[in-house]
Amino acid sequence: MNYPNSRLRRLRYNPNIRNLVEDINLKTSDLIYPIFVCEGKNIKEEIKSLPGQYRYSIDNLLILTKELISLNINSVLLFGVSDKKDDSGNIACNHKSIIPKAIKKIKENHNDDILVIADLCNCSYTSHGHCGTIVDGDVDNDLTIETLCKQSIILAESGVDIIAPSDMMDGRTGEIRKELDKNGFHKIPIFPYSVKYASSFYGPFRGAVSNSLNGGDRETHQMSFKNSSEYLREIEQDINEGCDAVIIKPALSYLDIISKVKDRFNIPIIAYNVSGVYSMIKSASKENLIDEIDITMEILYSIKRAGATAIITYNAVEIAKKINKK
Ligand code: PBG
Image 1 (cartoon, helix red, strand yellow):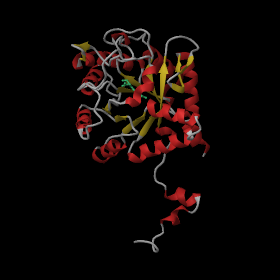
Image 2 (cartoon, helix red, strand yellow):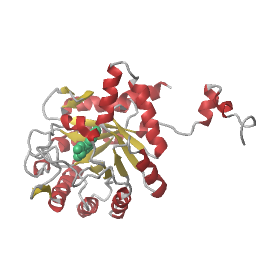
Image 3 (cartoon, helix red, strand yellow):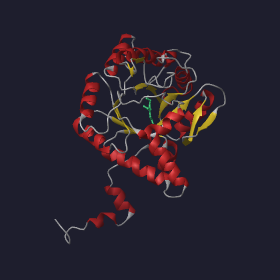
């Protein structure tokens, strides 16, 4: 039916009718807040490349998690910032490592009031900044999986709720699943970054974890954005290996991929609104070119509309405040 019988503006004439017909909803329970945790006491150090985001020592982390719970943000994604590094990231396979200590404290303080997701990779803990063990100038797949499996058990023993491998090694989801099950952790879900593109949008993040990649790039394991169908095999393999949800990263610029995964697979999709998007918006809003929160809200809605179940976002706090006000 066409104009004049159909007038689509009839459903837009006032806020109540607009609200009535809107069908995409962004809730505080959809938000996952990424946090950088470092050693030390009373540290809350602003990250230059991510203005408004901080590295927290564990004591200050607990003040933050309390605030998040009061805002109804009930999921966090933890990243370790470590000065201690070695060739393979084995240094993280230890209960004295920063993330296991942080998880224990969060769980002691908040129990199940907050869901703790640990980003699992070696790149914060390797001296060369790569995601795993280097053999013949490249990240060795199977040796890297061995350290990831060891790190997973330590995380599980510390009380982590969800493990999110972000390394992009082939077969790691299945191997980590086997290792967790063998050690009695069959209840811990794995949310792999199944679809992770080699992206310039991660630039500001690398400053946050003091990772400056000593030569080389991540293109032998992260995906090429010039490839339109490889994501299908990545998702299929992770589902076959027993993952419980999939993470897609970056979200913006890859909404087509989120939407296709939503159509083809019956699995929750977590999308990551990454550091590059956050920092670009911060800069532009500082210049008064755009409104940071309005633009971010629009982006988060687009990610949900594409099919994401939940979103990892550095803006979780401001967005939750805005949602709670309504
Ligand atoms: C670690 C990891 C990265 C990000 C999340 N986990 C960096 C990378 O893979 O190079 C990027 C997140 C962001 O840019 O916000 N492997």
